[in-house]
Image (tube, rainbow, N blue to C red):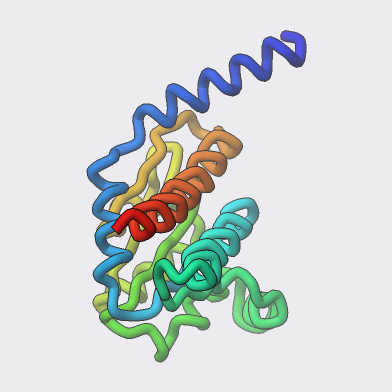
Length: 189
């Protein structure tokens, strides 16, 4: 397959996968953000870590500087010194859990982003969040994994295993859908 054919195929798969997005769950996610009274923590590994950072930027400063919304959002993937210290001293599976421990409140939300939905550090953090009584928004792919089972709001991208690019693309698109909606919706009132 040459590059042009590959690109057309990729775009076609992306479009078909986007059409499977559960818009009811996406609207529930939007509604939850608007009614959330606590802090929003976003977690993710690898490419999903970048999505977590980007989403935190868009939903916090991106909206606040436009005077649209004022969400209290923190990406727990952004402080490398803290993450590496936790990973080195007590294990990578504790990277997000330790940052949430003893500060997470029931009114808070944890947005967990994981293609497989099975990353041990994501599962440990959201299991803790469940115990605290916080709301879990799970952005997953493939078959959804444990994240899909544990999430209160399930933003699942059904895809073949190891379709990281497509799943990560759609997770980022979801961020931009929400961000753009909040800008346009509140400016039209």
